[in-house]
Amino acid sequence: MILILLSSIFIIPVLIGWSRLMEKISGFELFPGISGKALLGILGIGILWTVISFFTPINIIIEIPTVALGLFYFFKDKLYEDFYRFSKKEYYLGTVLLMVILLAGSFHPFILDHFGYYVPTIKWIREYGLIKGISNLDLTLGQMSIWHIFQAGFSNFSDPFLRINTVLLIIYSIYSIEKKRWVHLCFLPILLLFSQSPSPDLPVIIFSLIILNEILTGNKDTLFLFAYSAFVFAIKPTMIWLPILVFLNSIVILKPGFKKLLFGAGILILFFIKNIWTFGYPIFPVAIGDVGVLWKPSPEAVKISSQFAVQKTYDMQYSYEEIQQFSMGDYIKKWFTLEGIKSKINSIFILSLLAFTVFTCFKRKKIITLICISIVIKSILILFFSAQYRFFIDVFFVIFLVLFHEYFTQRKSIIVFSLFSMLIISVLSFPGLIQKYIPSFRLGNFMTGFKKEQLYKPSTYEYHKFNSFEVGNLKFNVSKNYPYNFDTPLPAISESYISDDIQAGGFPQLIDRNNIRKGFIWKRMTSEEKKEVEKVIYNIKNADK
Image (cartoon, rainbow, N blue to C red; front, side, top):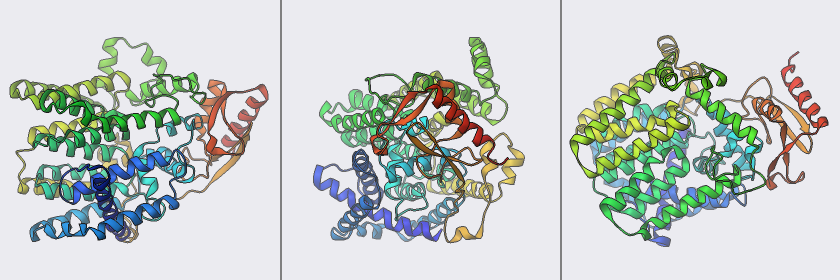
């Protein structure tokens, strides 16, 4: 907890300082206060580091001048004075929120993507930057979220434990206090579950709630609203409803002129370029918009990925072949009747959408109608591509905020926060409870409980067991007897992707055998290379024998 606190005390002033630099350069400003400045700093640094990562790793050489520049403006322009504007009661409330957030953020990571996607992505960005055709090595890495670029930049010395999400939760709690929009405190307990990992789900939920709150409270700054909504989409494209909402709000209600949409459009273009560079197509993981680059993944690899996504829709309870035999009625019925908690979430999701649609019809307010249209569009797209609950969890937050943003007073919100925070901390501290009473919630099986060492530093995992192999011109490492490569030296490939490559009949190769930064291509295997890969699989499966 102490080390996360020190990281937060260090990083937040850097973000605030960068907001002043952005204001000086572009005149771009969000809203007054600590949280507004921190959010603008996140936007500026995130975009800058994304551009830089095309050319160089986001390592300590990049982090030091970024931090120095932010701290320079923070102290030069006396931006720390914003911290003196809180009342005593607000300081007490903020201290309680801070302690709860720090405690939650100090637990072991338990989201599986932390080990298979988040940490490997951050390692690549920190050691090499954005790599052309990285999806050929491991399709998951083709995402290279801007949030992980942002985390990578602060992971060299400012935040070595990868707790940037905990820092963001602190900023979000400050936003709630500064704006006196107490309903946001009701969301904090659930969001605590995302604080141990650099999950992009947390920032997109928080940013979308802030933007939505600004719209509902009359913020008419289209430049800020659309730019930040584009930034949220660039972090996680499943948030497509947000730029749609802001665009519709601009056209139907604000009518500001298209010039104010240009900054946001530039962010979207950067996002598409990044994806083409790492994945070969504009939007991961959809193989649409082929621009003919040589490093795009094989059609077979994309097909295998899409089939897996279909299976994930049904929680891996049916094979792809079984799903293909479903009638339209089966598609719907089996999605609602999955074993475990996910069927309940699916049902609540559809009921919430229907209830919100009815509410919208009765309310007859333009902005609420636009919100409803936006989340319905997003929901249809999600249901069409891969109806996994993690892709529509943000919809619950949106509906709750619209329905209850005027209902929750400070007192009510603090009561909700207190009760549910105790519940979440109890679950994290004693995971046997959730393992016993909700066994279908699989993430509960990866929670390890409270350890006294957390009071000083956050809990992390180490493994450092791997084997090295070579196929063609590619030397690579594979984690030993473990499916993920979170601390395996680069370049690393998961065993599952090697099996997919064999099924697809090819294997990733370096464009330049002497320079990993030149990127990867996917190459059809010769008969000799097939034997090499089969030997690799044999050695992996028999590593302990």
